[in-house]
Length: 614
Image (tube, rainbow, N blue to C red):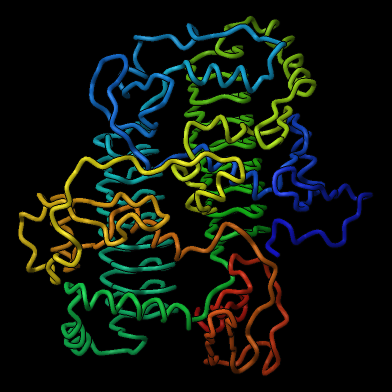
């Protein structure tokens, strides 16, 4: 079993640890003493959903890639929005939403004790204007979503930290000239890089850093002019893990024509197999203390956290930079603290509970959505520079402090019950029914994929593809094999996606090559893609491990290590290159890892990995 449900052994209630049953999936989950201390600190009850179900529920409120054409309700300008065309609430462009042409308090409602709180909040959600896209201090990013402090971003998502010229990518921090990449930081001129940072002029790098002028590398560090290799450190002029002289390296490389799609396709398959037979570190955790998860750096006491740096005392988090003393939060951080059950953006926030997109400088907020520079708010939507508000209605400090405890009691006495019978008292995040998005529009489908039938059975909504009003002018098989044979006129073509919308990957059925992309592919000598940006994104996602942990033993068996997947009928053998501390006996070290026991890779503990690779 994975980590969320596996740690049920040794439970001792006298120590404050409890096992509970998730009211959503009916599985057991554990609440530990530190968890109870956190709940007491921020004055919330313990959760009734398990960590994984809580994670999935939050993800259902974050739509990144499904974009729609709209007109701003206030000024009439044509805009792109993350909200579906059938949305009930008004949708404003960036200028109008931030402008003075409307007042969020004008939508305020009196609290009604005859209705559950969630019903009243839903009514408010359906009235208050929504910002078409989440964009903070960014330039020329009208075709991107969830972007902050960046420039020239196109069909990319979760891009922050001064990034520039980013195309068809996700989770990009402080990077420039990036195409078709996922989870990349501090890099420049990168194509199909995944879980990598501090790279320059590289293509198809996976879990590699500080590399230059290289292609198809797995788990390589500080390498230059390397090709189709793995587990390298401080190397140059290497092809397929074989060292060459500088002159011979370039002679060999000339024999490999990356510009050909046929060659490229074969190299991708070779790279996939190379990763399988290489040594895998149990987790990518650097300069961290008391932390579990993956892709962590400079963390302290980060437990079951993924993709985070400079965080302290955080549990159950994903994509949380510079966050402290928080639990159950995703895509939050940047100097924030005391955050619980939260998703979408955020900067310099504190004590935010059960909320979405508190953009910046929000203090003591509960059950709120898209608020900015506000404090002491409860059940509010779209507020800016306000305090002591409930359901967008202004109160005095004394009135607010008297009313909030009554509302919390009312939420417990008259809880919201969704169509699947799940109960929402105070302490639960928003019901999925309140999300403005369908399940397959959100990142829940990326990390917890479901079929339409499964989603509906679990009580989630589903969006069928909308009719397309364009005509495909060229199919993938009609594209030139080599990038040198691609004419400039390709930017006028509508290319059919090879998946033909038959996948479960938000396929757009067709796509175009933009001028910046064509110029980049020619410069890098790379062939045209055959899949739409969404399907390309899902192929990258498949390379990443899930947001789960399993308790496992090191697979190092002495001189040789073997793994076999009975389901796939495949197996791999790795022979150690040097003696390990445990000699010829199997290593006894154990760890928490995002590699499930069914995976085919050979996974080593920190000690065995460092002997082999570092």
